Image (cartoon, rainbow over all chains, first blue to last red):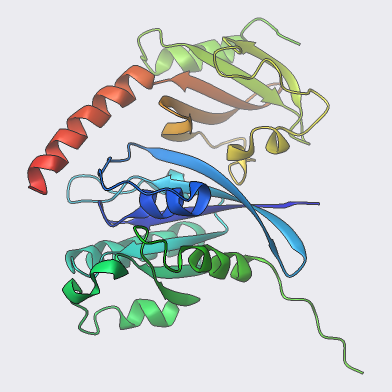
Length: 171
Length: 125
């Protein structure tokens, strides 16, 4: 039996949500930025602790000052990825508000924080603002959709959080 | 089986003022199998669904969305479940059961995409 789980990619516009999904699902990358309207849905199968799992990845449009994410997109999610671009610290604000929106809409769910664009790490500007979010996250992963670095690990981390660990039977 | 569009579905669709956009609907039983369907099912690739199997295994993008309660109306706008195809999904109840209504928004979605892309390109230099 395959476990189906809906996960959402959330974050400000142009932080690389769609690029991470494309890298993970199709192993492709394009430098041309194409904005997402509404939501694009992709699927990826993987195995976690001998459990087959099918991730339905909802790549939700990027949030900005004029366009907030609607709670209906979060309906039935099992977990989520919050993506930030540390070279654009303003993307942290969206990350916080989206985390809050999920908590208010669905209650606490496992999430992984993606610090994307690690290929331009020299431009990152992190000053401890993300500490609170990192503490709440299942884990934080530094990714590059461009190079492919740690992209698979990002989704595997979340999948790990979605599959219950086997119970240990006391001897 | 295909059935004429129930009056509740027709009324719901008309209330949305979607300018005669193509639409199709599924009415589901408690196990999410298709009881009946109607509208332009071929357009939305719904005509080949196996009536004996849950739609969740056939239309996987519905995972997590069902069920909605009998008092709820859920709208999820601009879902791209196929490349370059935009669809609004509405969930609500009719007398016969849970209804999933698909409304084609491809023209609108593509126009929005061009406009938003233009705005963002300007913004990001």
